[in-house]
Length: 138
Ligand code: CMP
Image 1 (cartoon, rainbow, N blue to C red):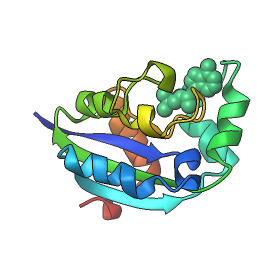
Image 2: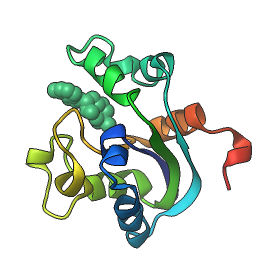
Image 3: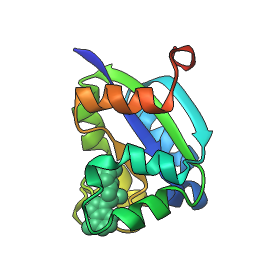
């Protein structure tokens, strides 16, 4: 069925000039852009968005990283969007990501891994609503 996922091009990939190439791969894979913008998350935004990871040892590092520069956030639509997008981006750790995936091509490390992709339909809806109002979705 057609559904939606939420993504961010993270500060490392924006800094390194990979925004255009990543959007091209997303487009070529057949995702329709429902919403998209460039923003910079505040510390509070990142702590709220990643609240599920607040007890992890890397939480402070994650918040620091995600707030250090602008991101591109987007809601994407396609058949089987959540699963297909996770396939397109590859494993969290770029060292384990399959050849041709976005993280294999553009990520630096497990922390600075270029892109986010929602892990379920429910989280896609929550994460999309965190970043976008209804008037920004088309
Ligand atoms: P993502 O899966 O998009 O959301 C959680 C993020 O936490 C993950 O991407 C990584 O950026 C980060 N992360 C996960 N594991 C580690 C780790 N071991 N060290 C540092 N950052 C991590």
